[in-house]
Image 1 (cartoon, rainbow, N blue to C red):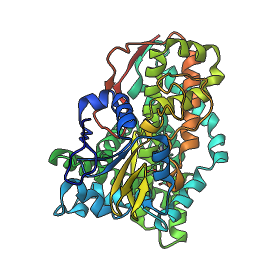
Image 2 (image 1 turned 90 degrees about the vertical axis):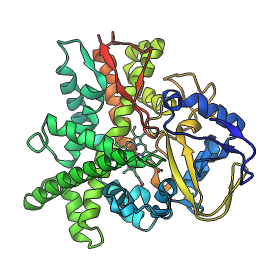
Image 3 (image 1 turned 135 degrees about the vertical axis):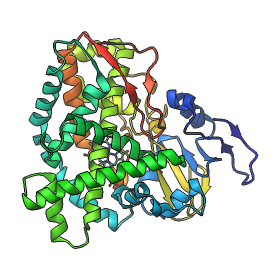
Length: 418
Ligand code: HEM
């Protein structure tokens, strides 16, 4: 990223290109540079960028001055005023996801979803998550090698979400699960802070149509034959309250399913890569598998799988020494805040026994990750099981193959053997 003090707005401005392969390979160096030179800065892409822990946090928790704002305007910022946002099913879907809504719409749906994901309910899922984890590892016990990302990291949270939504093997076999994973990855491209090209947008639209049809059929089956699962609970909530429409219900299911596995899968992949790059930390975890809990937190901090979120200013407001005008957007770099030396001593050191300040990997404020407890539990179970069962795990860490998107930081593949 280059900084220049001279711009038409007379604001210090950086060039920000979320598709730059160098940025995707190593965002942390670029973030550290921004944080130490221009921590709250306007970018030529038309939005602010926040990198300091304090600024990122104040933007995401300040519900009076920041929120999601006008969805159409937010998307037209990338494409221009003529872009027909709602002609695209992927953006129509996104506009209806509660994370992109402000109160009171956000409050209603979030309340419903958080009831299904209370800390107690999630804790009760531990035996099921352990059973799924060990079943997955059993499949590869004799082979002594696997491609971690697809064989394990994606599979585990996908099967956990299926378990929650009550989707069994009859409703989604391995092949269909692969298709659902791919559909989420392709359609979640609409979360990127940039215009998609024609092919990407057409693909995102097709994949959202596919996901909507899949979840509609699940709800139809639950309506005919209710079960004790999240899909039936969503259906009951809808029928008990006319405001939750059929579309909203399908939208929530896709959002939960997608948010539930894409970030968690990358947490597992990023975790194993980082532990392999820091073999003394892996040895520590192998010796003390109970450290899986603190290792999960450190992995979330050190190699956050959701790099950023964004907010729109409702009012003219001052943050990080800059005046933000009402309507302007801020890219809040969670991953940059998580390596802020003012908050985390030696932030570039990966230490699974690190204690102290809270990371921002799950966001904050009214949109704080509703699945945080579940993700933490999945991390705890997965890293513990891997350390206990594959203590001699080896992988080539020389050239990690990062997936192309900016917002989700995760690996395309990671071959491991033991
Ligand atoms: C390592 C795993 C995960 C990470 C890093 C992560 C990260 C985040 C972050 C940063 C936010 C806040 C977004 C914002 O403020 O704009 C968020 C929100 C959300 N997350 Fe997660 N998440 C993870 C796992 C999960 C899981 C397992 C689920 C579902 C079961 C989930 C569902 C959601 C939902 C529905 C929201 C929106 C909440 C709202 O707007 O009120 N996430 N997540």
